[in-house]
Amino acid sequence: MKDDNFLKENNARHLWHPMGHPGAAQETPPRIISGAEGVRITDIDGHSAIDAVGGLWCVNLGYSNDPVKQAISDQLSVLPYYSAFAGTSNPTAIEASERVRAFFAEDGMARVFFTSGGSDSVDVALRLARQYHRLRGEPTRTKFLSLKKGYHGTHFGGASVNGNPRFRHGYEPLLPGCFHLPAPYTYRNPFDETDPAALAQRIAAAMEDEIAFQGADTIAALIVEPILGAGGVIVPHETFFPLMRDICDRHGILMISDEVITGFGRTGDWSGARHWGVQPDMMTTAKGISSGYFPVGATLVNEKVAEVFEGADADGAIYTGYTYSAHPVGAAAVVATLDETVRLDLKTNAAARGAQLYEGCLKLAEKYDIVGDVRGGHGLMTGVELVSDRDAKTPMDAATMKRIHDAAWEAGAMVRLGMHNILMSPPLTITEDEVNTVLGALDAGFSVA
Ligand SMILES: Cc1ncc(COP(=O)(O)O)c(C=O)c1O
Image 1 (cartoon, rainbow, N blue to C red):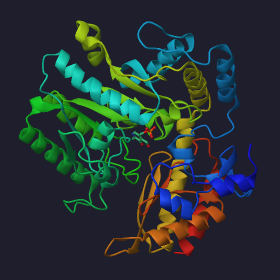
Image 2: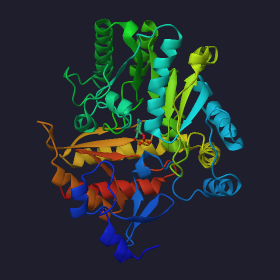
Image 3: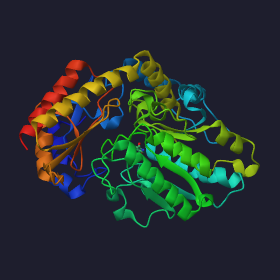
Image 4: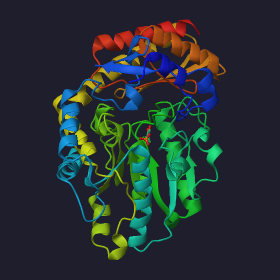
């Protein structure tokens, strides 16, 4: 390992970072995180803080889970890689597929397709949705519906259904045939509707309208997050997901629940769809599937979709997938992660600590005028939207956001900025005391605005 001077000197000089400006990264180099233990991360200068980001909504088990580390290491010795393209498999992938399917059996999931991450899982789901309709004799169903503010990764398909202009404009033209509905975002929406149940009805009406306009027989799928994560932790009303399910059913449209963040306990339930009492047709997962210890994702389909593929002629062959799909080391990480996720009953802690974090942020909103909106209360996903003028809801400027972020870090918590939102998704193992530390650090951060 090179020494600290080398690392600081070369920081961001050769590495272009995702989701940032490469020139700006050279001027203000990123923090170098060099170690982690439990729910804490440590930078190269020895400063330690609670990771209220959970890596990137993914380190559900915290950083010190030895059974998962051991499983990865053991698998590396036995079989570090083999392809799962048609014709070969490996024992760990077979076990992992059975485990993931069983984990989501209550959601109606029947088959598992492994990928290398969330964007891959989304891409696979969109492809399978089109192919499903083609196999059933409805090849005109090629379009996709999704939500503004939604985030579905950055492959061209995912970027096309994404609802944030940031991830779209530089890369257009994107996939044709993608249409966006308003988000269930009570703080700002085109209807000026602050009641979440009424807003859910408005969006359902907009969806019906769009389907009538496009023609139901042209639409393959709706893709939607149970709680919108990167878009600012937007929590829909409890009627929203069931409404979406009902409309999809009535129009023959597949419902894809993007569970890349919400899967594996983050919402306080094992899946976000289950949290809302809905069975989707497909689920896209990643992140918590391996607690971020190895890059893995999975797309799941229900029996209805599986039957169409498995009963089809040669056109039922799936001509997508990745070199690292069903990677044996990733599969070992998945099996061990699921064991630990269930053993530690992460969903129950996520619900309790999520409520604590949310309520703590609501208290901070009473103290600081810069807090425009606090969103969460459904597991360990919390968003705090900051404004410079509460009445006008003016988004807080980037320089102030950075100052707040730095002050929170100095006071003991790493939080994530998403524009003028503070986003939090700590490991699901976090304790009551540690949540209090995060709240204290946020308090310190807000005080420097
Ligand atoms: C809901 C959702 N879908 C897809 C993705 C993309 O996952 P990845 O970054 O692993 O490609 C993300 C990433 O944050 C996500 O939050």
